[in-house]
Image (cartoon, rainbow, N blue to C red; front, side):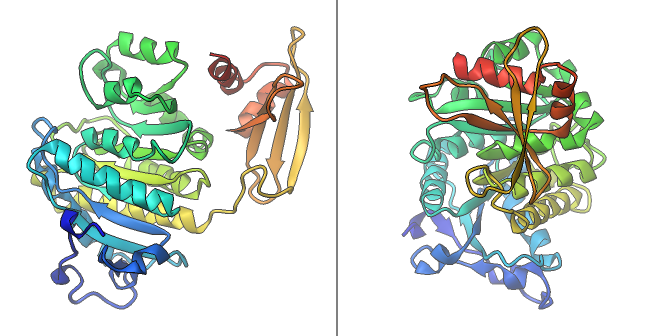
Length: 374
C-alpha cells in the first residue's frame, strides 16, 4: 500500500537475538500485506535530518533506537506490535512530512497507535496534521526544553494551522532561561498550558491527568538532561532525568486517550555508548507497558465510579468529581447550560479534589472553564 514510502527492517537488526526479546515479538511488516491491520501499535522510523538546525544527525536515530528496543526483554503485554521500518527520505523535507502524514493517518483510522521515532521535532507538525480527519478537537502534549512563538517554526505552524482543530497544547518541562516570556504569555492568553521544568519535577504524578487527556504526545529529547541523554546537539545540564521521562512515557501509554506517541531529536553522532538510544528504547518499552495496562477507564465506558460533590466558596457552582473504582483516578465535571450538551468530564488529580473540599476552585477546573467558554 505504501511500499514506495518505506524501507523495511534490515535482517541484521534481529540476527542473534534471544527468543525472549522484543525483536522476536515485534512483527516486521510490509504495507502490501494485510498483517499490519492486526497490530495494536506500529513503529515508524523517520531518518530525516533536515529542519533540525545543527542536530541533523537525527537522520540516523531510527535504527539506533530500534536496535536497542529489539534487544530489550519482551514486554509481558499481549499487545500486537508491528514495525514498518523507515520512511524513505524525500527530495525535500516536505516530501518526508507528507509520507509521515499519510501513514499515520491510515493507522489512526484503523485505531492503531503510530509510534514515531527519529528526526527532528519539526516533524511533530506533520505528526499533528495526521489527526486532521481523525479528531475534531486535538489535545497535544509536547515535552521540550524551549519553544518560540515569535518566529516561523513547527509550534507556530501548529497554533496557526487551518482548519483549526487544535483544542489544547500542554508545553511541558520548558526551561525559563531559554524561553521568552512573551511566548509563555501568548500561550496563556489562548488558555493553553505551559508548565516549567521545576513545576513538573516537583510533582511528576500531577502530569498524569495532563497526559490522560492528550490525543498526541511528542517528546523532544532536549527535555532530558545531558547526563542522561547526551545524544542531542541542543542538550542541557538541566532537564528531566531518565526515570522521570520513563514514568511520563508510561503515563502516556496507560492513557485511554493517547492515540500516537513520538520521540524526536535523538542524534547518535553526539551520543555516548548509545545511552540516548537506549533511553529512547526504554521509553518506548514503558509506553507499551502502559498501553498493556489500559483499563478502558474513560467515563462513559463503564459505570464503576464514585461521585462526590464539593461546594466552592464565593457563591460559585459546586464541582462534581468522579473517582474510578478500577484505577482510583479522578475526573471533574464542567458545568453546562441546563438545555445544552451533556456535561464535559476532564481528568484531574486527588489534589484537585482536596482543593475543592476546602472551598477553593482548582486551577485545572478554572482553566478548563475558560477554554470551553472562549
